[in-house]
Image (cartoon, rainbow, N blue to C red):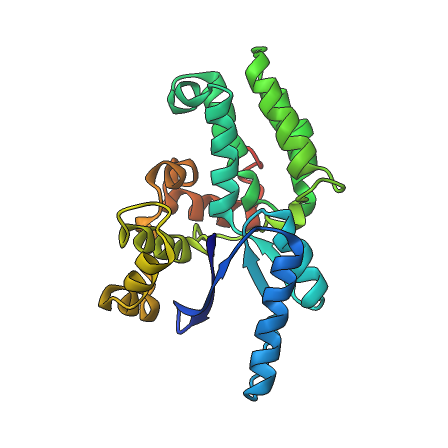
Length: 255
């Protein structure tokens, strides 16, 4: 069983709107979930027609949103993107390489995490021409990582093509970090990572849960390692670089 939450952005704060307990992560389950929301809103005189839906990189959710909310534009969360890429880095044994700031290989891996800050139509060219041209040292594990990223996220027919997650913007805000922080706080309400329904109800009725629903926790509560993947150059540096890249030829994409 999983907890599925829907949050809304109101006055620059994320507010918990709805939560569901789901038995699985199948597309049909998510379809029924969104249909239930539509029906409930319609019954109570509310219009549920979001312009944008910010979600993670789970194919079943994407399919359900496209089916039930065809006019909504899906945007992938940068936090979840970094989480996904970081898991592959760990799986391939590249964690120490990534954290080595004096390593050419580590610097290359860090550059990859800058791709979401480009225009979506620049990503594939930057990946193939700019990034791969600077990696002069052959490494089997890095090649596996590159192949995975290219096939899953870079090409136009990838599972999650760049238009879902790449957007040129002079900000380091990640859309759903506060929601992730909410889930982290929610997990802390329970002794077990998989509480039974009775323990969940007790936690749901606690004052802490009520307060969390009104004010989503600060995004800085999200997992620190993934935050560092995005912030290794520093927010101010990224903002200044974005502006220079936008308004002049002072910077190339790699810079």
